[in-house]
Image 1: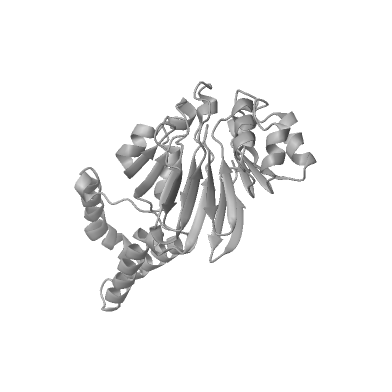
Image 2: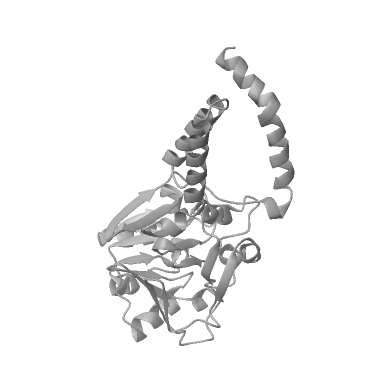
Length: 309
């Protein structure tokens, strides 16, 4: 019997019924296990092992391939717990959503959820990292493009703590990560300016996250705090209402991240704002041009990569 006939026989006698069982179990939540392969190499290894198992169904070699397959699946399922990489992902989504994860699953932080969409873009991105627990879900303010997926996030993950502008701490230590929050001095500011603002200390770098703050809150931060940072998440998607010259010069960042969705209807980011950063030699990363932006730290070494929007 040739290999093709052999595979056809195996498919109809064994694999086809198995497919029906898997489909049936997938409809029952207690049988559903969600995980993703952590990289392309693991996907290739999966299909190679699957082919070898099918090819060796009638001999004892199949057992070692089945054991290797089981090991691969276990490692993939626990890839976040085993990963030594610390990571910040500025997710390509309408609005704001940023994933901050410590190495070895010690801390997972999600900053905003983006707008609600039928694709569950943010949820699926987080699941692709094999993250099942969110230690802190930070909602900077209550506009749809920052909290649209809040309820879905709570349903899909084990969310331990939710932080917003009414219940933030002064400092927060989570795994090896440290966050320092800045008080809102004037409580009568508009919703954008009420955004939760904090600095993240990761390895030797300092990041300043600003939600949708505009000129008035920027002036307040300049007056009351030392806000110098290595990296800045620009306020309000790079709008002209934010990123004032005094604020940029007070932060004095080496790089800025702008969450302006591709072909958004608000014409974000402003060309004037872009020029302000360019004139000061600040590296600019924008999700409308760069897609999801991932900054990773591997035992102190910093790497940055982008994906097509």
